[in-house]
Length: 495
Image (cartoon, rainbow, N blue to C red; front, side):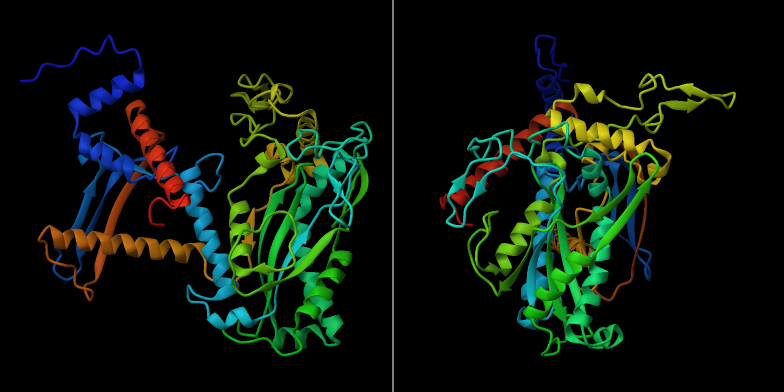
């Protein structure tokens, strides 16, 4: 019988745990389970079982119990789309978004390839100005001009996007614009169809019978802390991407309709505390025609033509971002025990001060956040507005860390292309095919395609994260993935 190791001299808890895993468990299985997560930073720990049986013969085809794992639990990926939280899972989300956008431009994934012949545009809609900010201006020749402060700012200068005069900057308007940006986009899509019918001299009913407007959009934060939207807008026939649009549905008509919709889309916000505000788009918007296929990278510097691959890559990049691009934090500031209210209901039914946040409602003090003063002021403004009765439904204290924006980062119309769910189903089918191949290698009979399988399962959430020793293994996996990607980029190994 092997004597237990004396690990008292090992200072590192992670290394001590790793040694224990290697000596007291099936270490190969531990390593395999961590590697199967492909570098996920915060895996979900589950306890439970699943059994798949042949409905006809009642024979068990597949079975699994987390109790059979060395650690007694199943690790599965967190699936977080945010690159600031989990780079590994966000890469999968970005890849899915890329294929979703690309399919709506070039076909594939059950989308007709003729869709590339439909009029398409890459549209950028921005927020209005709430006060002059530090920026990098250029003239028509592309030469850098001085900022309003008189200086020539570098591209990475922290001052970019911050107000020239914070005392006169309209922080209330900026936060309310972010909070209503999603609704403004919805209103824009409504006015786009109306404007298109007006431009073409026809009724909306006739337009809807002959044409469908499909779109996919993604939100991006500017350095000034305001979101703007990038959207792919496409004309289809009445049945979607399978039918061509009528000849009179041209890019020029789309361009004109976007300009009219930008001008007319409005929301009015009224409050006793701040008066009446009109939420509208900024005057700077852009509509570019998308050409079919192409190579290269699309950057923020505008180019004359956009291609399918470039646009899809550009949209996918921002689908995994949050507000960290504006310099804010990627976590809610709301105290969870009191839901940001600062009080909890006591046993006697009265409101008691929340002991967790000492009545502030904040999980961490806003004044202590490691952010710029401009961002801190937007967070504080969102927090204060959220506690006004007229803005209670916006729950701005919950979204203060997002500077008021509470919409989805990426959305699409129903018939734009495939769905993220369909792409995940394809991945699931591939994994099942891999499992069948493993059964064949093990000498087990293959599952009959005509067999009706019934799956029963029961799972319970335990926690999130790795054991200290598993974290070391995961760090090695992430290093190996990054190293392989770097070699591929340098052309040293096949892509």
